[in-house]
Amino acid sequence: MTYAIDVSRETESRLDAFSELLLKWNRTINLIGRASEPEVATRHIEDSLQLIDHIPADAGTWIDLGSGGGFPAIPCAIAMQNPPQITLVESDKRKAAFLLTAARTFQLPIKVEAKRVEDLHVAGYDILSARALAPLTELLTLSEHLRHDSTVCLFPKGAKAHDEIGIARETWRFNLSTYPSITNENASILIVKDIERA
Image (cartoon, rainbow, N blue to C red; front, side):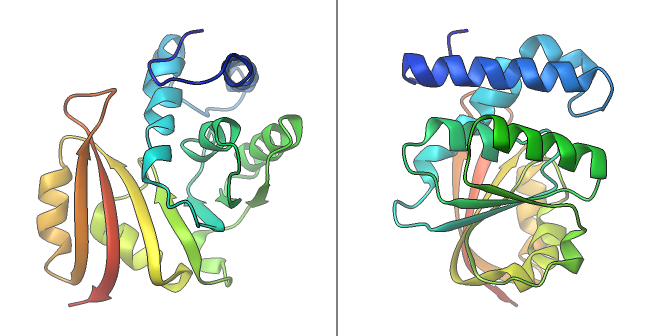
């Protein structure tokens, strides 16, 4: 499968293999919506890969909340030459089993936590991400105990991003950069830093 984002032939092959694994598991576990299965390359993998450009080169740790089918972290880990140590958080035990299988299959530097975000106690991740998990205000509150002063938050968002930002600024102060999504003209990527309560 050819991707809009430039990747090596070997990476392309590994991403294709991940897609096949995902679709196989999706027959019995709802990892992605069935309607989006034909668009797994664009709607899920390419949508994930565009985050790579926003990951600081010196980042050593990355936590992804509500990982589900492994987006965005697994495609990024497959495509990056030296990915950081990644923790995937997924409370659904069946989805967590899929994530663990994918991490082992592709020999990725990934640990899976089959817990609720509130039950995690390791703080200070360099990168924090969440895709389609919750509104921005809730994400900032939910992840407060997992961040340090320099944590970079990567949040892919849909058409309501502007409204979410406005609501979040009522209770949080933060520096924000917004980038248009390359896979959906109504979507964007929010890069949130220097977060503190208002």
